[in-house]
Every structure is written in C-alpha cells, then in structure tokens.
Image (cartoon, rainbow, N blue to C red):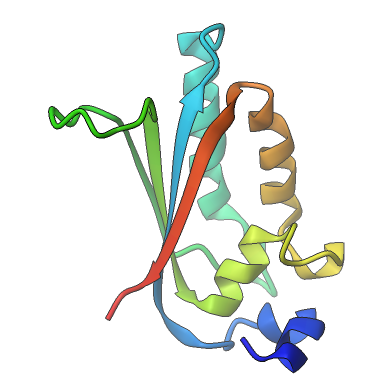
Length: 135
C-alpha cells in the first residue's frame, strides 16, 4: 500500500482494490472460564459474518473453522481456528476495520461488533491473525 492509499480509506476498502484470492486466518485462545456454550456462540457468530453484505452483495467469499487437534505440539495454546476468504484486499480491509480503517463508513459494523463481543472470552494474548494472498 502506498502512503497516498493509506490516507484514503475509501480507496483501500473498495471491492476492486487489489483483486485476487486472500485468506485471513484467525486463531483463538479462550479464557479457562469460557464455557462450551460460549465457544459455540462464538463459532456461530463468526460464521454469520459470511452473510454480511456491502453495496448489495456478500463480500466474504467463505468462512471455515475447526478446533485444534494437531499432534505436533506447536499450537501455542491456540484452540480454535477460522479461515475467512476474500476476493480482494479491499474486501479484506473493509472486513478488518480498526485499527487499519478508522471511519465507520468504511468498515463492516457486524465484524466490528463481533470483535467487541469475542474479546471478553479470549486470553490477553488470545488471538493470532495471519493473512496471505493465494498465488
């Protein structure tokens, strides 16, 4: 992103900004007190974000999730993973919102609310986010 693009949120959140398949990986570590019912609600709310629309169209290509069960022992206490797919960096940027995007007109209010909701159930270092473009 160029410095000029960074200053213009409406440019970097446009659906046609840097088209191409992008994966947004989110990993959670829950507080010990987070119940199975709360974890299920988190999963359901995260998956519901795939129904979000902007400009009359769904902009999240897909969301997948699952609990950690690798036998390698490298999970760093992360317990639940989500992969959201987007068809452009603009769609991903619109989804991410704060801290990248500060104007509420340029980010998804549903995802913004989800981040507020889920924070109460996560350990202080309980989220890891990793994005990559599919080539």
